[in-house]
Image (tube, rainbow, N blue to C red; front, side, top):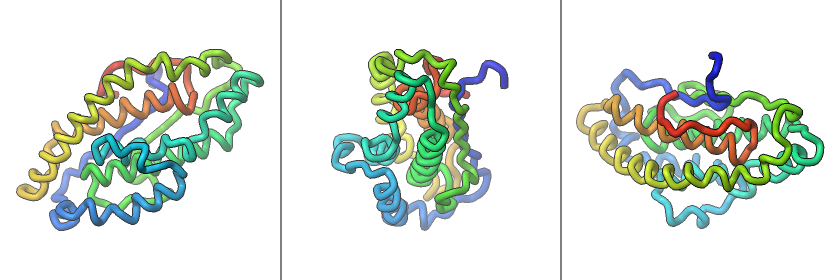
Length: 212
């Protein structure tokens, strides 16, 4: 829609009983996904060891070997171009990372696909390099520091919410809608910051909000 932020994220609410068995052992069931994500992201799991488990999964795709950040930055600064294949790689890696994160955080009971969005939707508008400020990519990481600080506390809160939701699913088979919307909102906020500061697809500063 008009005026919408160029990075859009949503997860379909599972309005159905969730599998309590796979929920109970989600840490174990998700191991193959974490290994696969580690191979395609090329990042270091140790670099995120200080974070909560759900947070470290979410940021794995942003490690140095995963998202292509330096290449697009240099092309934007010197040629004002964003090669389409670099954009497609970043978008698909972020989509897969989000699917794994959503599954890990119990937001969806279906095992994530490596190539289909299914219930997890991430849309990023392909940027016109000529319309982007060629020098702004050099300082976006700095301008996004207020978001990093807020996201740190949001991810801590999201970790607590996921633990509460784990118990709720085990007893009721349902993910409480309010808790669900909060965790999705944190992921949405994070994706906006990634789109702005790391993959450099927009010059529009991310809003400070969880809602779409």
